Length: 185
Image (cartoon, rainbow, N blue to C red):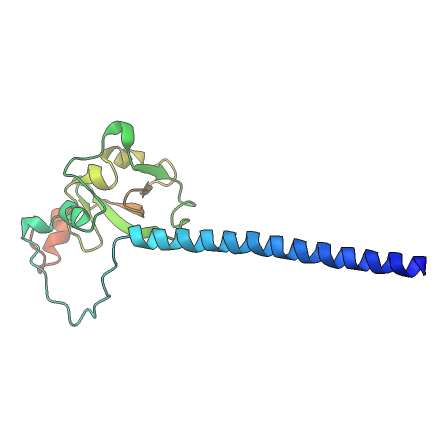
């Protein structure tokens, strides 16, 4: 009888201990899950709103001669840049990365730029990037040949972009001549 009551006390103690442990771990994991959910909500609240993707056929052609549509103005309008000043040398949001690091951060947009022989930097549509320091930093263009002869990779943490800058031996004016629909800047 003594053994039976001892066994009963042992089983009751194990059950009580298991119940307490289960409730404690459940509380901890629910708290962790709520913290994760709150951090994701906070990140989405801070993120600038994404515009709905338009069908290219429905888009109206933009007037590229309008000076308010400069690359820097668009960055400021989309809240990637908060002032008209270029970044200070002490607080640069951009830096050269290796080709292997390019596209490594899923949240960062990957953008290809072209650096022409006449020292013009242009985007994929051959629109000139006027404020190089705000986007990739002029000194980044001195790093050709560091990893690859004809390309440099730059990460801009403020813009959340990885830039692939490809060297082109042609002059920018030559490229424009072959594309009559583009007006020279």
